[in-house]
Length: 133
Image (cartoon, rainbow, N blue to C red; front, side, top):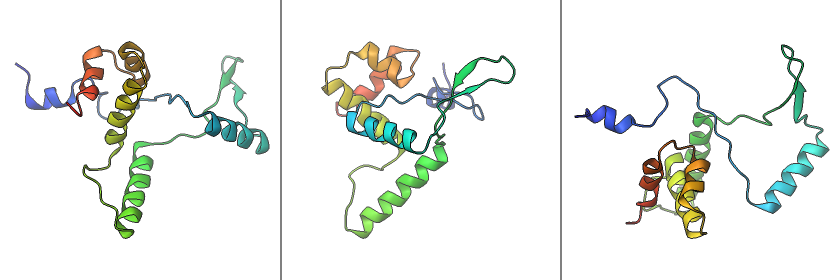
């Protein structure tokens, strides 16, 4: 039988390890604006690996968990100042649930969603689909 902590942390990367996720951009307007910014600012999208000599893709920017939590905290505070309240806590995880639900409502197959969310097991993805059940 699993301990409570083991059940809570199942499927997560070990503490202290870095998990990099790619986020697909499906908003065509946002993508075109991002492409314009990259071209205007001449942001390099590739660089030569000094060790191998091969060209590699470069991350435009890295966003950490702390960065996202700070942005959300500031946004929630600004909303509260305008009298806006939320029925659930607003966390990065709230957005993962919302993303999963919106993708399913849009007809994205569960196996595709599993891949987009970086889950090894389909059962991990199914957890996100039961938010409103």
